[in-house]
Structure formats: structure tokens, C-alpha cells
Image: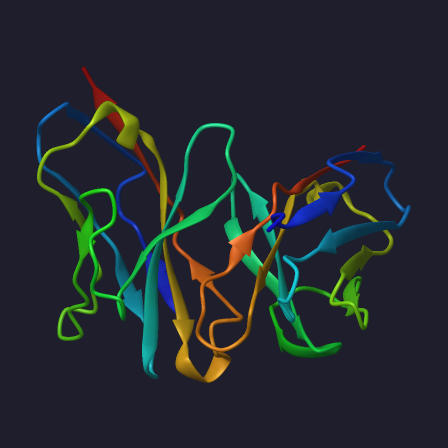
Length: 112
Length: 111
């Protein structure tokens, strides 16, 4: 099976812009979770989608949003970018239930 | 508050020496604990989980609810074990979809 893929892999944006990141889960996986990784804060949970519904949400401002499509692919959107949003954004998929999460390679977002 | 603490940012050992990466957690419900590993230039991957009670690549971890710990151990470290290790927690009610990670411990195994 192909692994979790994320596009784009690298992105440079300017403060105030918005960005959309995409995640394609492993075939058959219905759950997609998103994480932000920074040197200072480490890995922080953003949100989880399961069967097109947001099931869990982390402590991030409303500028961070996401959605999931019927084919389980997921997107996350960050509006009005701030310098502090520069990070590696990881998505992970799982089959559902208490199974392991499989991580993608991440999207490196740089905000200038 | 839900929290995972990994007190060591860097752990350096010689090949063949025992290794113990510490992890303590704070969680009011029933936790599921995991160890994830990230080798250089590779993606994050699951190493082991407490409910499996298995040994992967010679590593074991025992959940100690009394001490709220889930330390990762290996009796004889190998150079290929050098990587970043993350302890993570998920509440049973979250069904594994939300992982709370520790800050990570970089393990360096010297020849």
C-alpha cells in the first residue's frame, strides 16, 4: 500500500496570506489527524477528521481549519498567516479504532 | 491537564550499553501510551504501544500506572538506534485519533 502523502512538501508564504495543505491517507483509512511541529512547542495536535466529520480539536485559533472529503483526503487551511505559523505540518491516517497512526512526510511552511 | 514529559533532550550512550528513555504522563482517564521514532530523514513511525506488550527491535516499555510512567528500554544499544524518540499519549475516549506528544529525546549511540 502506498503511504500517506502530503502536498506540497515545501511552501513559502507572506504574512497575511492564506495557505491550504493537502493530505492523502493510506487507502482504506478513514481517520486523518493533523499536527504542527516546531522546535519550541514540539508536536502539537491540530484536529482529527473521521468520515468527513471533525472528531477532535486541539488548542489552536480559528485561523486553522480543516475538512475531509468523501474519499478521506483531507485539507487544512490557515488564514491570515503569522510568522509563528512557520512549522512542519504533519498529517497521519489510521484505519479507525485504537490503531496506530501512520504519518506523512510533512509540509514545511515558511512564513516571511 | 493532559501532558507527556520526556525529561532528557539528548541521551548519549556507547554501543552495547543499556538504554532507558524516560517518559512520564499526566492524564485523568484511561491512557493509551505509545513510543514513536523518527530516524534521520525519515517520517515518524510507531515503535511500540503499551497494549501490545511486545518487543520491537529489542525495545520494551512497561506502563506503570502508579508512577504514571512509560519508560523505553533496551539492554544493548546499537548504532542504528540513533534517532529521535517521542512518547505519546491518547485517551481511550479519543479512540487514538488525538496524540499528545512529549518533547522528544534524541538518542545518540556512539561506536
